[in-house]
Image (cartoon, rainbow, N blue to C red):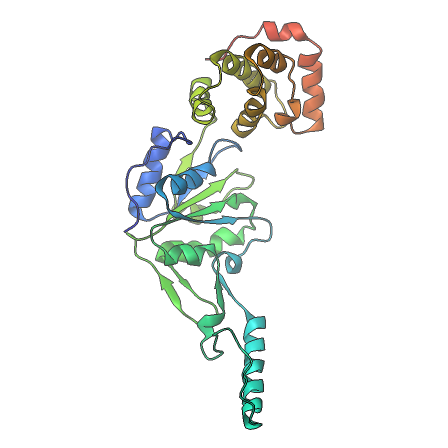
Length: 304
């Protein structure tokens, strides 16, 4: 039976009550959980940390502009099938000539088409009920990709290519499926209808402190306070790409290697700015608004 315990996070992942509830409902109903939100809000980390915390097998499908159902579910290895068929013919010819040594097909038999079906992450997850399947950034895939998943999500089964083998799973045994989207494009309404939906809002400063504590419990409070002050200020000044949680954690990972006084000084001088800022336009804007106006920092207050 698939894992149905109400999960509220782990030592490495902070899962708020609403997200935990949505995740629990999805697993209870045997439906995928579709999580949307801006980058860096922990969408991808949910299934990764859940699988690690529960010791469950994890299957990941990172989507892109060329994603298709064949890659996701299964494909038929025509090259291997043709080669093995030729080997069978050669072995017959060798046998007619009285040669005893046979060429090997690795145990595969061209008469068993299922021997040549290469299962993708979806078929593998459906074969193991107590597992986790992540479809990451589905909004990057061609629009037909989520549409092509409707049958599998509705009927909980896949039909294997060429062999016709049906891979079916019950509602109770469905793997925990998490689908993430950064909303680069709107997903089909019918596809969303097959999912439990949750939107992750960017965390406020108090929640961010808890997230930081999960990753770096020994960092001085003063360092965290000053870093958060700068971080949220950067998010408020209208950058093309505001820094995310992941980038804040990377910045703190560097900053915390110094003493408290040194760390605070480096934060105020925005040392390691490339960890937080990711475009040339944003870099120039920050340098103009903050680095060239140090008094601006002193006027800011720590966010609530």
